Length: 111
Image (tube, rainbow, N blue to C red; front, side, top):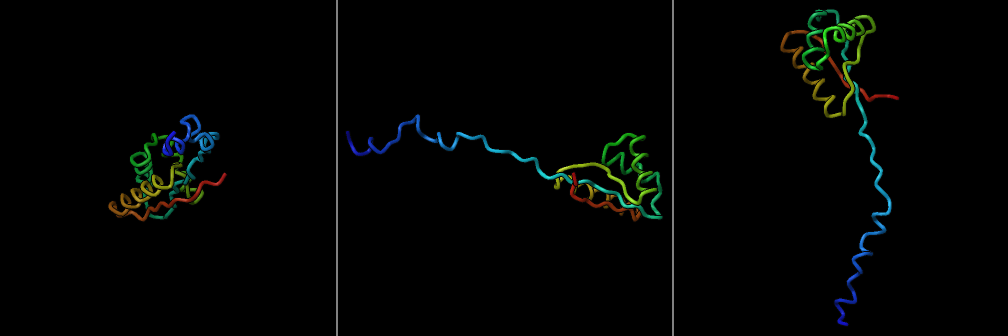
């Protein structure tokens, strides 16, 4: 037997200790996109934003808009951090381009 073949492990033994346990996968943290109430943005525009950016139907968009109006803020949707940041930015840019002060922000979802 030559020295090289003596050092090569049996192919059945390779990696068995590493593969004994499946890795635990964690869901990424979730963030909610929040609309903040102001005294100037028309309610119709808020409904438009909720329908165009978040794909809510008219009834759901109206429900969220009323929550923003009466409670000071409302949850538009729950997403991964990157998607939430992108959607919040889209709301803020859309609002700015229509000369409205409507703002959105993201916050971590609390259980």
